[in-house]
Length: 134
Image 1: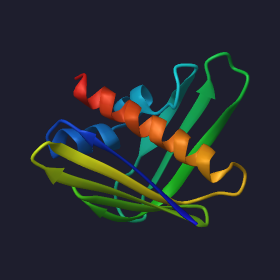
Image 2: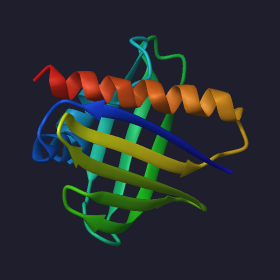
Image 3: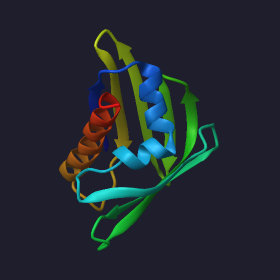
Image 4: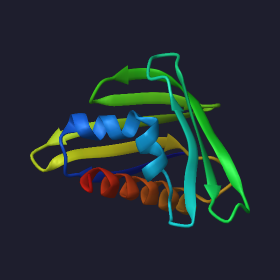
């Protein structure tokens, strides 16, 4: 099953792309709530390149790694990657009111579809606030 979430970011596509693909920015926006944060992020933005990040609870009680490999990169338009045996597609769609960032990903089996949708949407909304606040 695939899940899709999206948000509109009121900024030029080059700025949106940069914030999505720059480790220092990723560490600022990649969290679903204020009690979580990303402590590490790396990006090798090319087909076959790897990315990873470490998300942790601010109280240190838990954390997890998120990593994958890029399979398709079209600057300012599209990123496709694998997350183990799952796939992720991120589209950057420029329009008159900014950029729609749309993520479509294969659901995992640990959390419910609704939990996954809510978590990924919260992170995406945090991304939009980060970019628009710069």
